[in-house]
Amino acid sequence: MSLTVDQEFLEFLVKSIVDHPEDVKIDRKVDEMGVLLSLRVHSQDMGQVVGRQGATAKAIRSLLRIVGVKNNARVNLKIEEPEGGSRPPRQSSDSSVDKAVADLNL
Image (cartoon, rainbow, N blue to C red; front, top):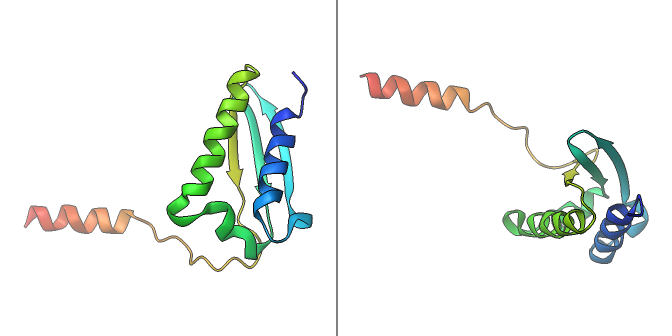
């Protein structure tokens, strides 16, 4: 297996769908769990990479798993949020769980 078949595939795929292909960066790390590809794109391209309700990201991950199976490797994709992303920070779900439990106890 070429060491970067998965990385080259991901790079080709992502550069084909984004508006800023020059900003696509992929880091590849191999450990006992398999291959981890970390993807960074221009902040304006995040919507195109993730897709509606994550459909595009899910499809990319499925294709990478197929590439990994063909090369006897477990391939995972991490999409890193770019600097200046517009997504609001996540709220802890613990408070909503605690509130729901408290409501049940009443």
